[in-house]
Amino acid sequence: MLKLRIVITLLFFSQYGIAQNPNPSVSVDNYILDEMEAEHAPGMSTLIVKGGEIVWLNHYGFADVENNVTVSDSTAFMLASISKVFTGTALMHLRQSGHINLDEDINNYLDFDIDIPNFETDSITFRMLMTHTASILDNDTPMDTYYSNGDPTISLSDVIQRYFSTSGSDYNTSLNFSNNAPGTAYEYSNMGTALAGYMVEAVSGMDFSEYCNTHIFDKLCMNNTSWYLADYDTNTVARPYQWSGNQYVPYAHYGFADYPDGQLRSTSLDLANFLLAYLQDGTFNGQELISSASINEMLTLQIVPLDATQGLNWYLEDVFLSGGGTVSLWGHNGGESGVSTDMYIDRANNIGVAVISNGEGDNLNVVDELYNYALTLSPSGVGTPPCNALGVAFLPETTFTIYPNPSAGFVHIDVNQKSMGFELFLYNSVGKLVDTEWLASSQHYTYQLPETNGLYLIQLVDSEGASKTLRLVKE
Image 1 (cartoon, one colour):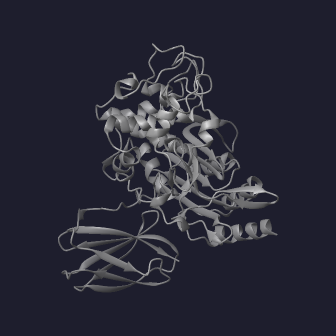
Image 2 (tube, rainbow, N blue to C red; image 1 turned 90 degrees about the vertical axis):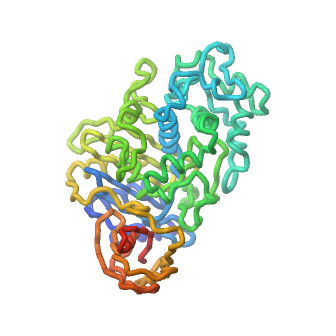
Image 3 (cartoon, rainbow, N blue to C red; image 1 turned 60 degrees about the horizontal axis):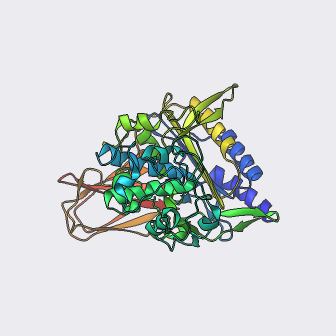
């Protein structure tokens, strides 16, 4: 009975969902719903960007089955191994800043040496960590102990010491490492990426998560993206599920201490900004994430004799075309307990696709469907989504409160000090300006929201041109 209830609700929320889809398609919706049923995905968020803007955004099903919480614009999903692309981006930022060379020995930056047994004189380089050729294996026995309910209880530094130091409690010469010289064999490695994340800490002196906040998420206005569950209201985080006994069975929210390899959580809207930056030569809303040269290097085959698809963290994946044949897209997928994710870009056609779900099935058929639909779409010209901190910032002593949030209709806007008035600009979740209004001199305003439900951005601009952008949910 539970399965029937979920499918009926999926159909309802795809047709009348709270996301504001610029290019709705009943046939695409129905295809996705059929795939969700076949792959046992209780909830899913889907995204297409093209030509510098969001051209598709739709959500289906449940973030929390038991409490009937539907997936929305603000639902954050664990990204699993898509996270590795962000870890690689952090390393490229370090390289671009002149702090590292991708082909130098990582031991130059460590206070203990990490060597491959039997190949102690051979260097492990940053590039090897980014291409899974460092001869580091995933030893499930200790790695299983790195998991915990909620956020990890062991620090990244401690995990790296335990796993890689010859005196570490989890060190094992035969199970943690392959019997190959570094750089001579491909072996997909989560712990290799965890080590890459730790190298960001070792080189920069910053906590890895904070480095990403400063140099990636803040630059791209990815305000609903974080490595840690503690940064969220868990009511906005999709609960992971397995399909067992003909029903959805929830996992507790969890984390793992080797977190740079898969613990990042984000929303489709935030992923749109990241994909747009990669498709726009590393730039988003005038902010440079990394240079176009760095983007080109990441999206270049690195180890063709060993693997014909691997770039720097990104890899090539074949997507099936509706007219026959395939096209290879740069991207990454991810899978964890109760998590399945995919993210790909086509630079030639300026297309990016993301599918994130809280089940354990395969999303690639949905990726195929969305990519083929993307080929038929034309951008409207609205451009990249608006960013928080647009324009000149208000003085620190000027604060705003919007309530209720979420709102069913009217909202109240309170300002802590009187001004000459504000120009209000209201944008929907895909960056389209939907309303403007002049708010006369006051400290309290009442504003009527549009009828359409979803995520909005309210930008207030004062007479001096200073601005503040706030997020608001209409439900």
